Length: 187
Image 1 (cartoon, rainbow, N blue to C red):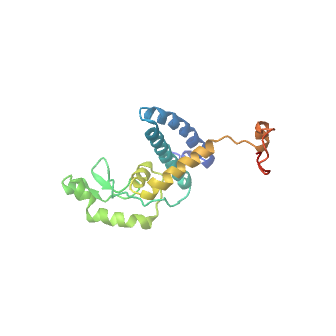
Image 2: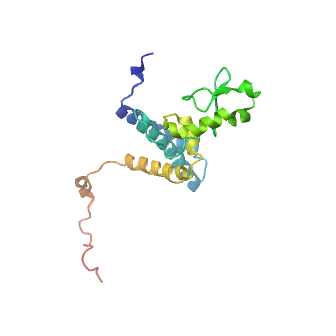
Image 3: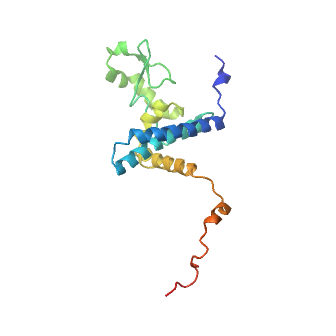
């Protein structure tokens, strides 16, 4: 009941996401372990990249309102139906009608004037949320997210997992008798 309990400091949220990624990496190994090498690597990359992409949106919008890399498809690809039959484009937006009024025909409810007006209003509302259902549903319909943002999120995740090694620590591995690359090679 205390809204203050819902406030998670951003560093704590980032740490939680990092810890969750470790679990998801293990899960991905088992989930895609039956696939041959190239397919397993691609499936793992896409799975982990999608999660990291979602986590990045969560972190950017936790206390702010930062635009997603794709349009929100709430009300176009999905519909929310409340326990009493009211429908809406998203749990975070207003009720638009009742499925009973459309003889429980979801297609009719999705194409209703109320829903069409709602869908048209969503971009102007700029209500960039942290709702994973809408992030995932919307990302599936964005070629740029699928081709660029998700692989980039995966690569950034992998780079962040690399150990921080100073140049001084690497000096112990220098080959002392290696030829100087600046001089002429031996004949």
